[in-house]
Image 1 (cartoon, rainbow, N blue to C red):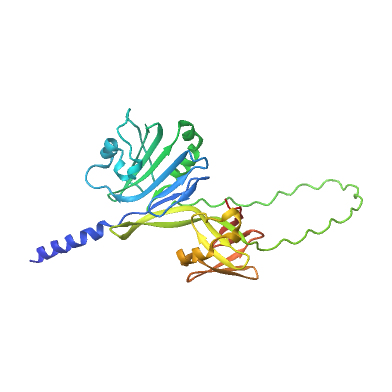
Image 2 (cartoon, rainbow, N blue to C red):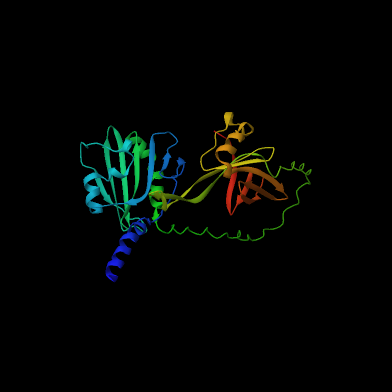
Length: 310
């Protein structure tokens, strides 16, 4: 009876234990726009190459590498991006991904589009990076950005960031023989003081955990480095988002504050200036930002810079 009870307990606990998935960490490709919660989607500035990053999901029956060689794990990408029968075999390569038990990639051509798919295995689950380009020229044009994303990937713990190089003082130069003193010049007029803060749209790169869900429950996720935006109006209103807010005509004063409050109250609120501090109150959250000069402020060491809305 004791063994039967223990077996029954393990059977009940099994699904709950199986739902724990490892987090996937990566940086958004430089120069690309986008992001996302369930699936991160990044688009090149020219719109000719798109990258989809899928978080870890259970691999299921079968061996990881054998399944990739057979199907390229197309069942793990969105139905609209699943390729049909290929005219020629894909070019496969083994990958080294920090924290992954195994990783493999494949390049292929489908429907006139250049494709690449990279898969990582960890704890019986698989994560996918899927790349779609309009042409071979687009692949070449954005090769560095794709490589930067792949190099940033790690499983479990985020990659350690290199410390900034030390700052050395300028070496002293031996004094030369004194020269004749130049004729005195009129003092330049003092520059007009610049304002410490300017309302508008601000952007900075932040690192955040994007959770994934299995059966309606949170399970693992992806660490993503990408843009975060703040809209700050001249009359003290504030709004925050990871996607660039829609600002008609590029004029922050025309931002739809009423719609933001109704649809995203936790990221909408007010701000005030107190000395060299910018205090933001968004929903129930209070954030202190340090002014770092005209058109700049810092939150927990992250620099936000005023930008022109697109």
